[in-house]
Length: 256
Image (cartoon, rainbow, N blue to C red; front, side):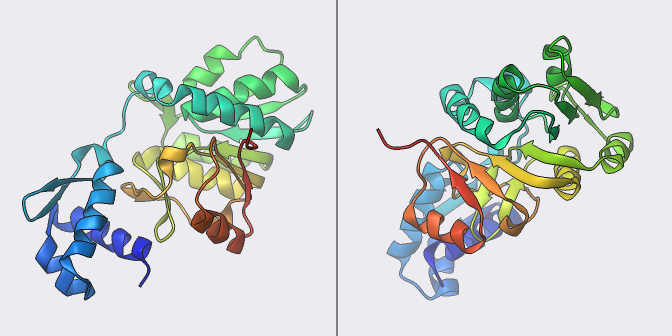
């Protein structure tokens, strides 16, 4: 068993029991307690667990869904770096579906500035408000509006997405795991992202470096459903090889 597979199983234990013990995990996975402590150190640094005496507990923030305003300010320079790289994947006249992620918003800002005759279908109230006078065609999914997330979800939103077939789906997620796939925290929005992926000819995932080797509450789908991953830093060689096996094109800034 590889280290990342063991860590994902430890995370599963944390979700089930809210806490884990070093001695129990060492026996379960037939490794040394020191190996388990290193695993827990990594999970602690990634914000998934909080180490305590003899083990660790689940970090409660793993399942939280922060407001749009707070999400928008996190890693803002990384999101703008990602936005500058997305443009080469979009053509004039493309039809797009986008989620409510702040990273997708930054990408759209760049795309709308440099591309014309776009059709954008979104469940993001922020996107609809910000770009309503940008000269592009905007289509709202409608649905139930979440006051904190500024997003439309629910049956009506799902039905709208399923009405259209688009050139590109652009969205983000909360976590990427080699074992668990793409993960998120909001169930309603996760359902819409799955539908967006199904309705698009090309799927572009936007994630900054902090999303790698993490896991969140809800699994979206596996990497074979993704065509491009755009990020702000070169991932580890392990990730590059892993994504290559799934034929995912990885885009990140060139080294200076």
